Length: 212
Image (cartoon, rainbow, N blue to C red; front, side):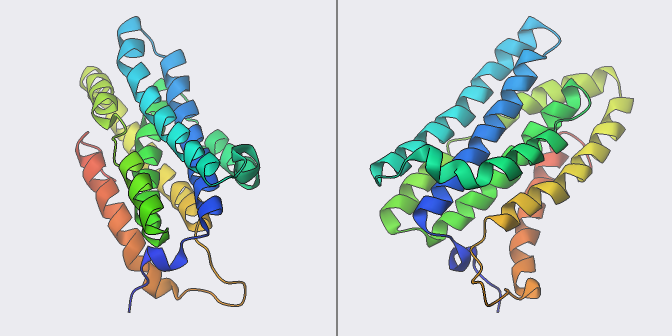
């Protein structure tokens, strides 16, 4: 029998701290793409995308405060690894940075949305509403398609970069699971969960003509 992600959801403070810092990392990735965009039209298009990630971060931080937790303390255990991840997937140029934001926002929003199933009912509903609010992926797709149409060779490079991102991003997801110290989940039972995440990722990459 497969494992449901809700069986491995950490306590609410840990979940919210980790999810919040991940959203902050996504925001910083998109904000970097805004800052380094090659022309004002791209900056204007991408700025609302950064705002969407920041809104998710703010919502998760508000949930921490609502429960009486200090947000900085709750996020502290995840800053070093998440910062290292963001550095590793920064990309060599603006287009790779865009693919990074597209891939990690899609995969990690999907993951934490599913992991929220193990939270208390009221909190789970509020977290789902936050994470289902959208990530502005259509805007990123439009920017990427414009670049690929101008330079078809760009597509091959970005497809390779997208595949490179998946493994590192899934490691971030895997690290968020609450696994009892004296047990290990059967990886064969976990595999279908991650297969579903990858299938959704593949559909997103198909939208820009990049093979996942």
